Length: 632
Ligand code: FAD
Image (cartoon, rainbow, N blue to C red):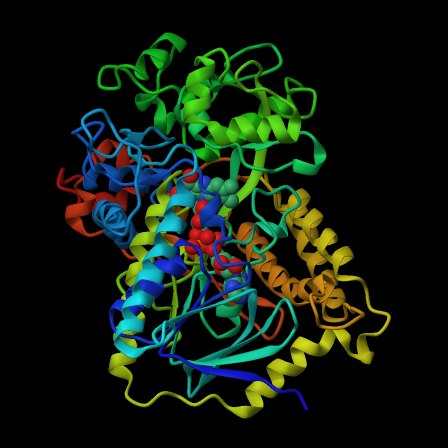
């Protein structure tokens, strides 16, 4: 008989990155007893790795900036497939969330006049990213953790117990969500260090589990990002949207093999770094798509002048949205103009003085020196695309962050909609602060309105326990090693549902995934439950598989190219697809059903923020009827 530790909370937040911490702070501020659970050590999340900064239209570096400009940039970046209400809330609330962080103790870099400094990034019209050198995520996490400690100190004064209202459970992986009478009632998991099982009874759960990059063989993501939240949501009856859209960041390290995929921040380009091929040519000028022609420089001279005088020059094409730059690099390498290790060159050394590089990009300097023995103040870096961010995620109500399952909320990278088909750099840190707060508030209000808490059913707990122990069972004896199956899955996704996609390859991928599903069901592990990485992976594999099926099925269905979804066989963006969302729901334990859904039309005053000529590039004639310019 297995003993299962049990805890009771009002709100359980799964994930301790920026979204989870901000959600937990909000739930506690609303008086809720809140648990924060994280699979990794507390403080170790993707958020901590974020380098470039947090987008917010404070207008410090250019007073022309405001929420409307940020909103327009975000919608353009997502190729107008974004959930416009989320993009609106995000653009309006991001500056307040950055300010609030300073009241919690953050200290962003400053402009000479003492206001918060803002840096340039791809797709943003004005310098907009609040930053702390190239270690912005570290400051964000440090500050949110500090706020939690200060709230715990307040709670100690009031109750004599630091953890009376907010408690952190780290190195704890959640494997199942519980529902009772259709509503969330709790969740189940295990502690990674000693394998003991735990259940949390709670009427509201916020998923803040981040991304899915570990389903690909080249990724900037670390080991935790196996799509757990996406899969937990699906299995609980929630829906995922936009899963065909994955962001391949244009600049990951390509050499040496052991570090392939590790991120090279976009700030290198924001600060003047340029991309060159093996002929020494700045090739991005050849890759500006029609929809962006008016906003980007046509000569190197103009592009260079923009860094000094952004009002009178157009930005260089190295700062196009990420999907464009990643595809361009891919084409150069394919055309045989790549660097020796299959990337292209990113040159900051000939653009800034060594002391400027060391001041603005200290982590990049350290990373290349330590990992590749390259001194970026003297030599160019070799870079290539790496799987970085998933635009797709849990379909939520924009204002409350609740999914279609009562009591289940999602915020941050695990939520879908906000970024449409492509996220702009810097828009994630702001997203997770804005919607982290909203999800904490939404969950608290839900709990207040609920009345009695739904009770967890004992059978559900027993089932969760059996499932967690399955990889040790004798029925799977002789099953495959989970690491082998994971590798196969990563290779399948990387090669067949990667940056450029084709129908026959994706069909092949889906066939392979069927086989991988069978093998996943019977992976076996030996040994005991104390820190057993094979066992951990066996449980994660189930999630990676389900998420990969969503990506594969949605990518096969969408017959156009848009943002983070490029079809070799349908290379053009098609207005008839813009208003369609592909919605995934779970079909049994390890299959997925795909349905189409119409996007809600943009509110008229938001629609009117765009010129009709621009909208014509994205919308069908019929949809343009309501625009202020009055055309059909
Ligand atoms: P994360 O910060 O990813 O946290 C997820 C949490 O969930 C972790 O605590 C994890 O342990 C936990 N978790 C996951 N599964 C489980 C489970 N089953 N049980 C319990 N806990 C679980 N964005 C920007 O805006 N600007 C940048 O400059 C920037 N730079 C980046 C650099 C790198 C190298 C990377 C990888 C990403 C970068 N991004 C950037 C993207 C951004 O950092 C992430 O999208 C964002 O931090 C995600 O935050 P989150 O709170 O949603 O989740």
